[in-house]
Image 1 (tube, one colour):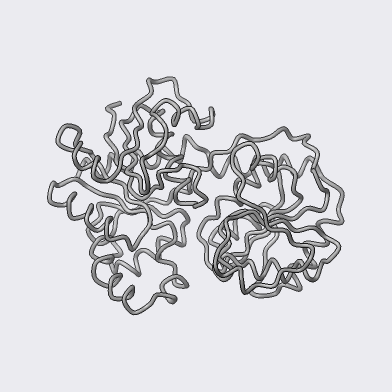
Image 2: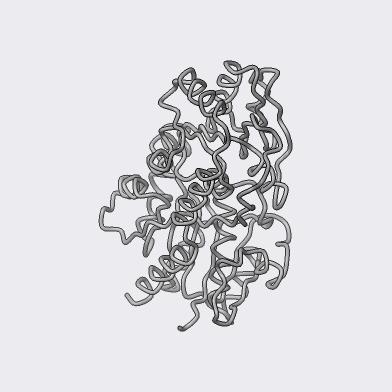
Length: 366
């Protein structure tokens, strides 16, 4: 297998930044390096962290292959451009949307006949588009639409997102693949003991409207005898939200601490008003923990089909009742293991990485 020289654009310099797209980029980059490819993460922020070896070691052993490791380095945008003379990328993979720097990279790649791929990570959802200001609407209808229309391919993280991308780009013939994000999570032992048998948690951004933190507060208010813990970095919108006494806000958690929090909870809530994937949902299921998601999440049908709880519209009273009914049940270790198995099958690192690799090779063959 001939290694592919890949540039990923859109990541933070810190792989642990609480951002689903950022975590997905780093996970994919590490997995590709372990399959023998030459990978550069063009990172935003201060000097990128880590070395090729330490970054690769962070990936789950389940993605390892028998072949030789490739390379994984992190560079600033300027350093990447300077390196292109000696190490020109075969393909550029851009993540996220509405970034002038991404538009500049698209123009740079087109001038050099380097194919680029766009993964919007939900950036073209109708609810997202509806909230844009006039300047952003002008940008998206000109520069952003030009960027995605000229992409060699696009990647959706859920099947319904394909329609969003086609409607936004006004190109129904765009080459595309549906590839769920890679989630790096070592599964705890199935016999873990919950730190609190009634603990309900949320992990992620604390943007009240987007992430539905107000919905969590409303559910908690209806269940004053239950404990709710929200983990995340403070957001300006939180200052106007009144939280009931049974809700605690804590700093973000990472690594082993994050796994312990997920494994120790009874239920994880992800009640976003608009969301495609929801990394924490799969992370919780990999720990055997029950989840409740909003019905607007593109992952919701799969979650419900696998025994998860779903918030219907704005029915927080119904959601609170369903949550209480679940919490009253004794722990079911067989169901916890079933959740793990379902999440592992859905994620299947090797299959997902191979899907992206096939898309790259299709693009390069044309």
